[in-house]
Image: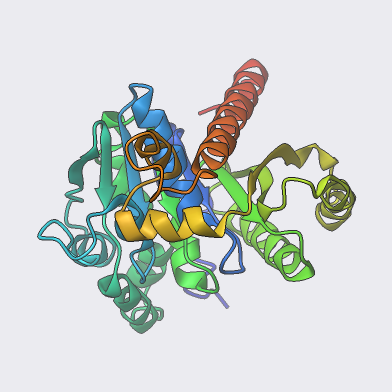
Amino acid sequence: MNTVVSSLPEVPVVDYSRLSRVYVVGNGKGGVGKSNTTAHLGALVALDGARVLLVDLNGQGNIGHLLGYANTEQDDQGRNLFSAVTTGVPLTPIKDVRPGLDVVAGGHYVRMINSVLQGEAGTHAGVFRSHFGLALALVQLADQYGLIIIDSPPENQTLLRLALGAARFVIVPMKTDGLSRIGLRDIARDIREMREHNPYLMLLAVFVFGSGSGSKKIRRELRKRVSADLGQSGDVLLDEFVRHAETVADQSVMYGLLAHELDAELKNNPKLIAETARAVAQDYDALAEAVLTRAANRQAEMIEQGVWP
């Protein structure tokens, strides 16, 4: 018997050629640096002159705390994002949170997306929206941006499905513990399942977040385990990592400044700003370069094969 889910179109219903620059930062486990990664990569690319959009698909609204607009008049706590996904109204990002960096804010309204979509789960329109609601919202403004990054929440299949339905590339931050590997395996499975509906979705890169700068042996061992977990080359795990720096993480939220911005403040406030901000800023800079280089290489390979939409 035909079901609502099985009646979803087998061919893409979204113009994915317009979403080729959409990235999701995700992991099934929380506390592995997804929001920090989203904010830093987006801000660094904007600093280089590109127009960037961040989508805070998170009920905590973490991006707002990292970028300093949380609880201001600009912060709608995810109301616009909720409306865009559930009713199709246009997205209205906060403009120029940093020069060239726009944000669709998250917050408690994002948590309400689950109940609305689950309430519509028995209808074709509801199932369609639960897969493609965010993709269709982003298609309307994707041409305005050189990069779009979605910050996805942990342990929320409905919101993760929306993110994966809109993306081309997935970046997975993880720690070196076994629980992070479970989260990695979970999102790898989610990617495989979503490819039935978004055939261009791919796992681009995995990297280590919050690791000691001297923990080289641990990261080497992790490479072998990640390769075994995913059943593919260990090259999916980048050499680049973001070091553990509690004070920098604390000050980012306290001041609403990212690592490279804290670093810029060091000379003005050496007693207030952690010296490790400079090293963390360098880590994110190296990570951004590695991610964008790998994405460009994947795109070139697929264009040569004639499979890049």
